[in-house]
Amino acid sequence: MSIDYSDGATPLEYDEMEGLLLTHITTRAELDRWEMDNINHAYQWADRLKHRNILNEDFICLLHKRMFGNVWKWAGQFRKSDKNIGIPWIEIAVELKLLCDDANAWLEFNTYPPDEFAARFHHRLVYIHPFANGNGRHARLMADLILEKLFKAPPFTWGSAILTKQGESRSVYIRALKAADNHDYSLLMKFVRL
Image (cartoon, rainbow, N blue to C red; front, top):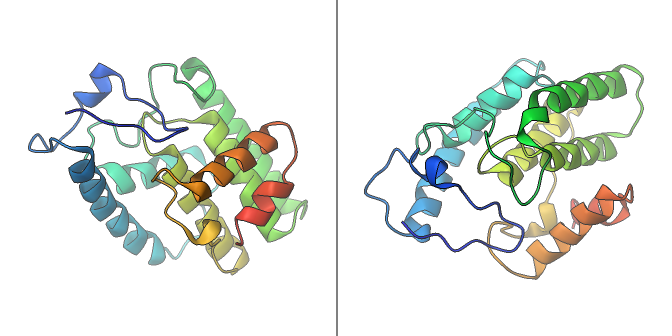
């Protein structure tokens, strides 16, 4: 299968492509459809969650598996290769633990208002880029779950656009993430509620 990647998307390695469970898929459009179907099931599962224990590595991996486990063998497992974005793969477990520890401290000490808390968590999770594929979609759902489950707040609108497709909204989103890399969250805070 040949995949055309959107700007800012993470290309898959050959070994990662071998993890495709649905061997009948031959186009990016087919892959997108199957992934979206799997993601919709994950949203339904997440909507039924009663517990608030989501700021930990186990839940983060479980959510990714729920989102992509019907499509990819490696869903929910940390990537084992370096990518065009993200930290070196060998540091993922440590950095994810630090993120979860920080987020639990933010929660305990009421460090940020809900939207800023979720946006900062989202940014750091994307920056770590723990998985071979689906990091942006996963981090957006994680941020929405933080808002809904921990703060009883509405989920983000994410620019009211489909961010997996190339376009102006995706470009604005990527610019906002790059600004956040430099500790400027103003563009991301504006974008998440457009």
